[in-house]
Length: 311
Image (cartoon, rainbow, N blue to C red):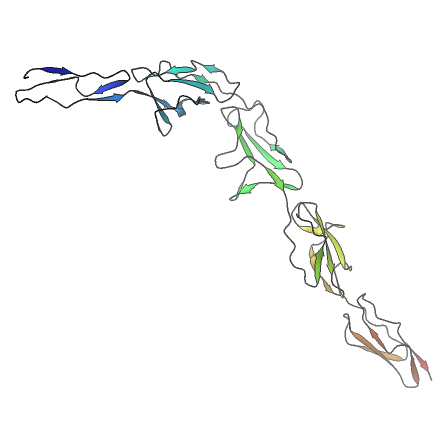
């Protein structure tokens, strides 16, 4: 009835939002707006707890970005990222009815990165710091002969940085350094030649053999040559790596100019394989031997040159 007053209160773990009491007015309505009970929560900002994290249980009631919200009476256990790090403060916190933790956040003291990382088929190339290595120290890596550092999207993954946790980690958007085998590209098609003994994988130091078809030779004067994949991912002459890489070209075999014969003459159609040389003698001389010779695959003329003898 008119003049009566009601009082509001919330259960434990909740707090009142709005007026604690309302009065019945002369029109028979309660004054003000009905209050609400809102759950009390303690916020925990992960970014404020450097070099550490919250143990998995209990799970927060709500998470907004880096801030987790816990209900009253929740207990969380804090641990340092590095197992050997010293914690200064209480490792266990309890959410109170006031929406605050019962203790201040502890501190995980920074640790040096003591264990130098090792990568397969690689080693540390340089560092601008001296041990002990603390946060911000960088290591640069390089690979052994025949290997290269992995890269992606034009980024070469070659560095590790010491973090506050005491661990080595790659820079943001980079990966841990990794050395992978260098490989030569598959050789292109060789005109008038073919590749034999080709390996399944063209890794560094692997070999293959190039052979020219009959009638063609390589610049070294031979029909075949062994090639080796070098550290620059180029196929090189296995016998002489410093030699020009034009080894992958087959050119036609050529014979020398056919020999002249005394008291005679020689005419020839060319110097390539299959070319013909024809001999004839002066008057009063007779040809002894083959009048025609052919340029052979071996680069020499068939038969011996004929002779012109006086009649």
